[in-house]
Image (cartoon, rainbow, N blue to C red; front, side):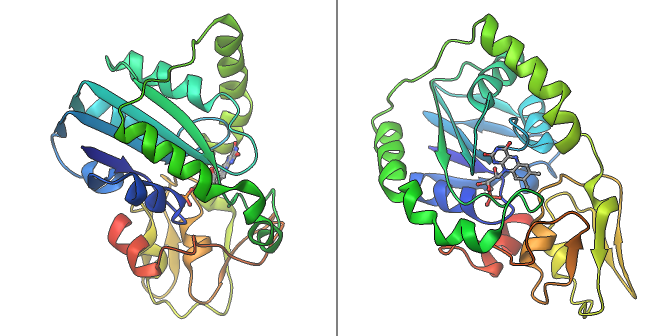
Length: 252
Ligand SMILES: Cc1cc2nc3c(=O)[nH]c(=O)nc-3n(C[C@H](O)[C@H](O)[C@H](O)COP(=O)(O)O)c2cc1C
């Protein structure tokens, strides 16, 4: 089994680790000229951004050659997975891939304009993550099939989400809104955790124009020096089972 993941704050890395198999970081696979993944089971674990998959995961699906009898998709999210399951099915189908199993797992929401991070972390027990994750791991190990039908309602929902939330969250260059304050020691960790190679650090931190809006740089800065004008929280989050080193290894 091959499990491919995209992560900014560790939720998806942790889930991918629990599902098991051979783990592949999608940002690292995307640096290869050719991506070929053949196995009895191949899957993707990625966050929900504005009701959809991250832009890079969409590009990954159109670039990768995946051959498997069991293609699974696990979305992690914090508040509302919206049309993420339908989106996973439909984007996969457009790339000639039939999804065998798709599900979503509610975890800490790392969306800084929307949520107070301390409150998110304090109420994490309510989400019953371990219980739900154990069920997902069992389903996948038993190669259970679960594919909700994508009818006219879901299609209309996807178009609406893509035109509204998707535009706000996915199509903007969020890095333009990042503020680096005086606590910055130019350690370069923001550049190392960025899955899009969008950051360079010399005398100052420079953001380029292909930000994935994942907030890895904001959440993983050891000095908490990167901020959003419209953030609801100055507290930062990383999944409790994942270290900064793990995020660097995944995205460098
Ligand atoms: C830009 C952005 C948009 C997000 N949009 C949604 C959303 O539409 N619905 C939701 O429930 N969570 C949303 N989230 C929360 C993430 O999907 C969630 O925290 C995810 O588990 C993070 O995974 P990671 O820790 O592997 O990066 C969003 C997060 C970011 C950064």
